[in-house]
Image (cartoon, rainbow over all chains, first blue to last red):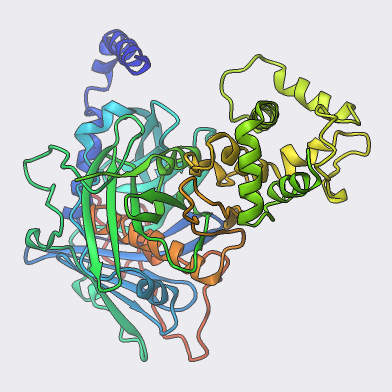
Length: 338
Length: 233
């Protein structure tokens, strides 16, 4: 009801703004600009250095992106500490790290295998949960920018402030903000080159002696263990595990099960078109487990238990959503009788 | 109230009750409505103080605080069976309940839920302490409960072990990777490339770090003669 009211007020407001809008007729609908931003990521060639602040840490990275022979290629290099690179070649993503890196150690502890296809970002659904609007101009890395605010309509999700390059719609800066306006994550280019002068050689990974490579890939539709929700069929299928409560606007994007001899993990992914969270359900370890909460920038992780038909299970929820919302969701995880 | 029950109740409050003690408390609570009522009030007060109750009269929270701070005998002054450890006294004249409800409040909740749900831990999520001050790990509560059907529920530990941390960060990474693999965007893989186990600084290996050159890039409006100017179209 509140959402409807806001939408109505918006409509009234927009009618009032029509006169003003003609003054900036050159500016497209901000939501359309978001879609343009998304295609700029894919289509443009760019090479730049940016800062990324998340949680308590500030990192500096270099990104090189170019479409070569119709294949999207990308190289992301962490410029601080032990070398880390991520090299994307179409759907194949290789992660190059030094032995002992956290990424390798943690990957060992979770079910391996391809990632489920889940259409996490759906801009057409944004207006159900967010108000997208311009909020002035800016300048980032020496480039003129348009500022767009993506403001949540309730307290169950975070907002974004985006600085898009006026010339190309490429994202120059983004801030992920909570309800109180605190910045949880900041991304910002400090140097940027856009266009065909981006060299193909810069896409090649540096041969770091002693480094290790781990590959990530998306599953083919045939891989899905438990249905495939990526097709035209948007009907929520009945899964063994589900939630009895979801924040408004969130829908299940995918559900799959990784089976291992002694261990299977159910993974559900939900999205509101922008924010997303995952729920992992596994049998309760025989030696027990701790209820715990941890946070990394805007990403929160909660582990707790849920009682199922065949005993207790351990549920872990991870997502870029407020802790209170995550808490409410994890409490509602239930096993269904299929 | 028997001495045994008091001891069991006290242990339950401190999360130190074993399965037999909890059974004793549960049995007693199932027949003593006064006992249940008392736990309920404490639970409500805790929620109000922690601002978990959204609809309450303005000033109520302050009034509860005042009541706890001013009444040396506590709002439930016949609860002598509940001993309060000295470190939980926030104020000498304050109610012994103050520490219980605020500092170690979640232990109370766990016990309350046991009592009110007749032994079946329906509202398990509430035992999660989401109000912890540590930026990363908030250890959960010890809940070692016997279910109504006599089956022993699994232990939820108070302190996270290395295995617990590893599991949770592993899932965190999996979520971040899954997101990255499924969306276009500059920032898609950034979170993954910068992901560290909380509390760990990026270790620099002993071997020499190879030179990873920073691109030589001109910012617009700065045209270095030996560089092709960046294109902005």
